[in-house]
Structures are given as structure tokens and as C-alpha cells.
Length: 254
Ligand SMILES: NC(=O)c1ccc[n+]([C@@H]2O[C@H](COP(=O)([O-])OP(=O)(O)OC[C@H]3O[C@@H](n4cnc5c(N)ncnc54)[C@H](OP(=O)(O)O)[C@@H]3O)[C@@H](O)[C@H]2O)c1
Image (tube, rainbow, N blue to C red; front, top):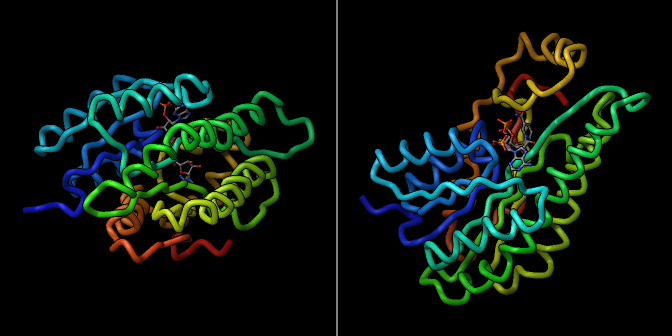
């Protein structure tokens, strides 16, 4: 059966787990060739095998998006190998929570570098190719999807720097949208609530315990609930731009 993304090429950062992995599978199932970008090559290799086993096409690119040359190289290698780039999903992210007072500065550095700088580097490299795809593809449109968070809309105690990075993603996305929307590159923001992935597992034990208590009784989202939204965004007709989607678990109040 024909997929809605047949003939297109997508790149997903942070494809080695969680939302990125589910997104890569969803785009591949619609017929996109998918470039899988993250640091854990073994996980990406497993995902590529799965996509190829399902009859799809994928490439593994090991890259740390916080390193500008690596982020740019991931985009350029995708275009060299597959000839184009129609869909870019900036998904790589880290969430390291806890009170700001006496927080380890290394955690703040990591969040700013991955969630903001990594996204900016990858976007800078991808934009010329997305603009070209919007001009010369039969679909006449290309997509940049940035994965933000509920934390990009509301602020929580103990989440200040994560909030700052995700609010930054929202601000940049809207400014870029204004710049390129008339050239048919759609810039979309996806804002998940609590989703069952590896994300929280990188926190210090005392922070993790607090998160467990908060979310233990809640039915959280699955990564596929978010990848479904990304698939929806990038398969709309040319004249429809889904600018922003906020998705919470039904039981999550804020
Ligand atoms: N889970 C949630 O509740 C939730 C809620 C709102 C928003 N989000 C957002 O959703 C996105 C995906 O997170 P997730 O929940 O799916 O968590 P996850 O399973 O931990 O996935 C994070 C991904 O980011 C990649 N990554 C981290 N640092 C990287 C770097 N320097 N360079 C390249 N890739 C890097 C990781 O791959 P490697 O370690 O292999 O590099 C991994 O594939 C993040 O932006 C997160 O902020 C998640």
C-alpha cells in the first residue's frame, strides 16, 4: 500500500530510544526513508534492522548534536546518501530536574547544550535542504518538527532550567515559522506531557524518587502517542500547517 511519505527523506535526532525511536518507526511506516541520529550506535543499528525488516529504508548516523560539526555532518550525510531532506524532527533532549539552588552546573550545561544548542545546530544545517525540498518536491512542502514539552508552556518548581530550554525551543520555533512559512516549510511544535521513556532515568536518585512519587499512580503517555502526532503533522496537505500540539496524559493536571 502506498505510504503518504513515499519518496521523502526524514531525519530524526534522538532516535535511539523513546519518542525519537517511535517517530522513526512511524515515519518509515508511511514510506519515508529515515536517517537515525543519536550517540548509541547499537540501539540505532537495532532500529534500522527493524525498519528494514518491515520493508523500509533507514541509515544510522552516530552523532552528538551538541557538537556543531557532528550535527551538520549528520544532515549533510543524509542528503549525500538519499539526495534530499523533506522532514526534520528535532527530538534529542535531556531533562535533569531539582532545585536551582546548589544544582550541579554540569546538568544545566547539558540541558542547554542538547535541548537548545543541539536543536539550533541541526536546524541551521537542515533549513537550506528543507527549503529546497519545499520548492522542488511533488508535495511542495517540507517540515521541521521540534519536540518541546508541557514544560515549554508552564513552569514547575524544580524544573527551572528544563523550563528555560523548552520555552526557548518554543520561542525560536515561532520566530523561524514566521521566517519560512510563506516558502512552505512548516515549523511545528509538539509538547508532550509525562511519557513513559528513558528520559527521567538520568536524574539524581533523590530527584528520581520525587518523580516516581508524582507519577506512580498516573497512566502516562506512550512514545507512540507522541509519534502519532508527528505523523499527523507531516502528512497534512500542503495548505495545512499544524503549528503546535500539546498532549498530556488525561490524568495530568499541569
Ligand atoms: N518523556 C517525557 O515525559 C517527555 C515529556 C515532554 C517532552 N519530552 C521530550 O521528548 C524528547 C525525547 O525524549 P524521550 O522522552 O524520548 O527520552 P529518551 O528516551 O531519553 O530519549 C532521548 C533521546 O535523545 C538522545 N540524545 C540525548 N543527548 C543527545 C546528544 N547529545 N546527541 C544526540 N542525541 C542525544 C538520546 O540518544 P543517545 O543517548 O543515544 O544519544 C535519546 O535517543 C526530548 O526532547 C524530551 O525533552 C519528553
